[in-house]
Image (cartoon, rainbow, N blue to C red):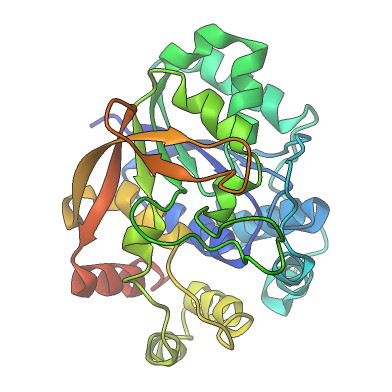
Length: 307
Ligand SMILES: [Ca+2]
C-alpha cells in the first residue's frame, strides 16, 4: 500500500519534540520533511534538536528546515527556553556530526517546494502556529490544491483559552496560543478550502500528562525513545501539562481512536478576543477532534515509544 505523504510543521516546544518522536514511529506515513516555526521556542536549538532526534531514530533521510516567519504575540520566554535543555540532553549528543540534513532555503520556501514536487496531495501535521503554511501559500496560492488536509493543534471552541489574561494584558482569555501568536495567518488559512481538522483545547483538556504516566515511561526507559520522552516530560511535570501536540499527532497515526465533530467557526483577528476560534453559525466549516478513547491513547503512546 502506498504510504501517506506527510509534511510536519512544529514550533519547538517540549510537546513538539515528543510529537516528532511519535510521528517517526509510524509505519504508514512517508515524512517529506520537518519545518520549525520560531514560535514556542528559540529556533536554532529547536532545529538542532529536531535533527538530533531524527539521527537518534535512524531517520536522517528526512530534511529539516528553519522557517523565517514572524508572529504577532510572542510566546513567554519561560515556555520557550526548555529547548536549550533538550538540545543538550546527553542521549542526543553522543555523535560529533549530524547526519540529518539542514535545508538551506527558508522553511516556508521549502514547504512550497515540497508541495509543488509531491505526486500526491500532502497531509500537513501542524503543531505550531499556521504562519509558515500561510507564507508558503503566499509564495504560490495554487499549492492549496496539493494539501490533502491540515491537522492542527489549535483553537479553543467551547472552553476558555490558554493565554494568560494578566501576563498578556488586555486580552479576554478566550484564545489558544497557536492562534494568538498569529491570528492573521489562521484567518488566511480559514479563507482557503483546505480541509481542516483541529485538535482544540476542548479535547486536550481531557488528556493530562500525569506523574503516573511519566512513571510508567520510566519503567521502560531501557528503550532510548522512552528514556528521551521521559526526560522531556521531566522538564514540564511541575506544571499542568496535557497531550496537546502529541494528541494531534496521534490522530494522524490512529484516527479510529477519535470521534470528530463539525463546527462552523470564525477567527477573531483584532481586539480583546484576538486569536479566538469563535463558534458561529454560517462560519467556516472545520472538523474538531471531539472524543478520544483514553486507554487506547495511552497504550498507543507506550507501544510507539518502545524503541
Ligand atoms: Ca507546539
